[in-house]
Image (cartoon, rainbow, N blue to C red; front, side):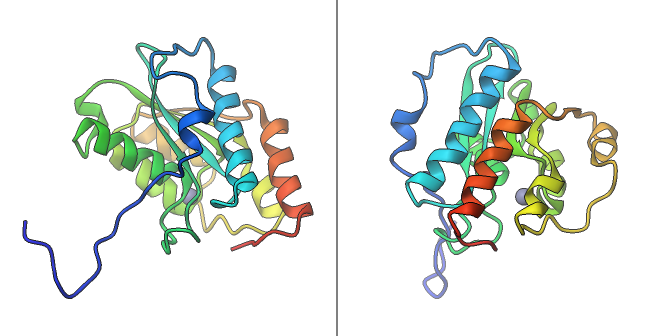
Length: 190
Ligand SMILES: [Zn+2]
């Protein structure tokens, strides 16, 4: 495809600090809690480094327990309201495997530091994921002023209809604390 000369190219780049924030790519995570702890660390560091909002996500290979792609909220940094951590992680995973459908390459699970918003709930099934695991709840994000959009409730039913299993409240308190700290610091809510 020949790119347009008239309109800008859209690209997403993960911040450089993320390279050192995660174990080696061969690392096999042993539990949902270990995977979620890594994702919450990404959310915390994203705020610490000023690269985006207090949300992190990652795609893991369900068979091996290895991390395929991290994601952090890059909405403000990338001038894109779509650059939520979940969408960023899915896009990095799809780019890594060079496919728009992760299901064509294996079983992949999304860990997210906060329940998906209305937009991400729409994006997740199209990415070809088999499982979604969330830490903080929708109400925890709303409590500090983030708008999660109009969602079907319970949202897990929507995922199940697409054959995606859901697990909530994994390390919820830890993820909630990142949101609280962000709010206390008076950072941008959008
Ligand atoms: Zn979202």
